[in-house]
Image 1: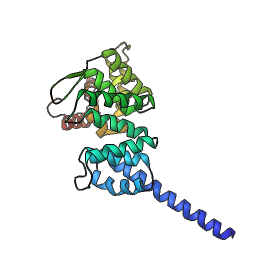
Image 2: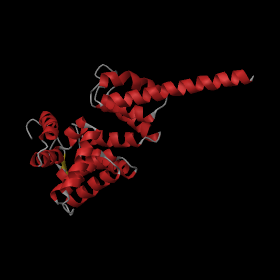
Image 3: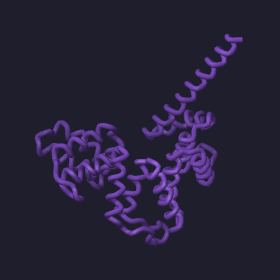
Image 4: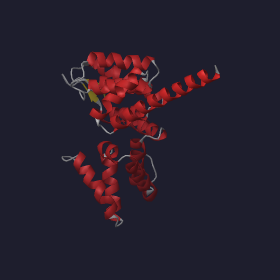
Length: 248
């Protein structure tokens, strides 16, 4: 009897290890934007009941990264709702992001998206906090008729990027580092420490930094060049130019 129990436990542990591997591999390829590689792992992880994997798969479907997968945007949003009900903060942030960025939108859609991002931010999502930073920094209009949904609000924008930094979000670390580097937004100038913080954000994820942190990245490149560190600045500048060919 004991042998049977031990065998059953071993099988269960092996199944858990496989499930964890599917989640980890799906997440790794999803975050690297290698969606074709992520897809089979995410499908398996969703079948195994992982809510965050369901959120990632739904986002891929919504943003049309898996065109051969037989689901539409409506079903993708339903999947996100299911993942939210299962306790996924990622799903809450992803639905907020998707709702906020729908092409066929209304002011009501925009406000629902912002509401979800606020809830996700309060639940600890640094990505939601960063998205809210951009919402209040730039303001929001509908794509269809240009109706103003949210006015620019520098105070709220600053609040959310500070929150993103507190949540150890890469973008929050980079932007608050930029404020300290320049001595703006109420921060005392501390160039050396600030530059090290921005460089640390870059080293955490080169691609994510280059895509989301243009202003801090440019400031870091200037600082490095001014201090004779061109070998360090060169690859950062090249990546920023790659991601922002018309803005850099």
